[in-house]
Amino acid sequence: MPIAHVTGAAQGIGKAIALRLAKDGHDIAVSDLSIKSEDLELTRKSIEDLGVRAVALTGDVTDPESVHNLVTDTADQLGALNIMVANAGVAQTKALLDVTPDEYDRVHAVNGRGVFLTYTEAARQMIKQGTGGKIIGASSIAGHKGFPLLGIYSSSKFGVRALTQAAAQEWAEHGITVNAYCPGIVDTHMWVEVDRDLGAINNVEKGESMKAMAAGITLGRVSTGEDVAAYVSFLAGPDSDYMTGQSNLIDGGMLFV
Ligand code: NAD
Image (cartoon, rainbow, N blue to C red; front, side, top):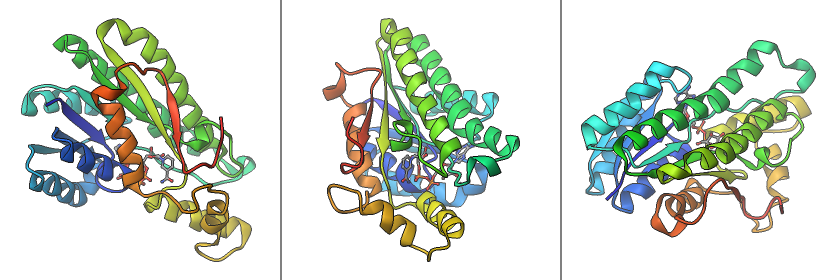
């Protein structure tokens, strides 16, 4: 079975993706920041309990050397890298007029530079192997529409779509497909933060901002990590072989493009 690496897998969507790919039978390397080591080890253990090999690696996706090591350590310890999921990301909820240049850089460092480094290091490894592969990135509904108070986050997620399109065209000759997933509102720690910060800006109670956003979901509920992971399972598997450069919505029907 192909071997997968999932970044930002200590919690949330990344953890759900790692567990789903393990259920699909893949050996998995999971990674996250070193401050998340304990949670990451829990993810690793849960993967191993599913009967596949699991490796936990720490690293920061904004750092080139770190990302290089995540990729080579995966190949060294599990034998190859066939599927890379560039999932790690950060949110920011703030009016554009209040965002500082440093805050802009911090969000784009993880969501933009981090995805660029993860895509390119994975591609280098896959090209070296001569095996082809599947590279998958985290965009968002905010990669299709710029949301107020999420302007910097939105611009970073639009960037993931552009990178995904360009990478798909550059690496097709190596048998590598590149696609991204665009969730809507997923009930993870990230949304706890977004809800808290929107609530503070708009002066509404905890939970109310999420409820207001969720009211616009056609399927009538917010997403779970497993909803997103099921789509990533498709992107990681052979049924998506004739698909590349796409950043599709998996949002319960929030946007229609
Ligand atoms: P989360 O905050 O629960 O988890 C993100 C993980 O990424 C964390 O474990 C964090 O430690 C890790 N991370 C952050 N910066 C990192 C870095 N520099 N290097 C390595 N790891 C780092 O978020 P989530 O909701 O699980 O989101 C996962 C991805 O999905 C993100 O890219 C996010 O933007 C995207 N997304 C989330 C939602 C949502 O509603 N939750 C919607 C659309 C897109």
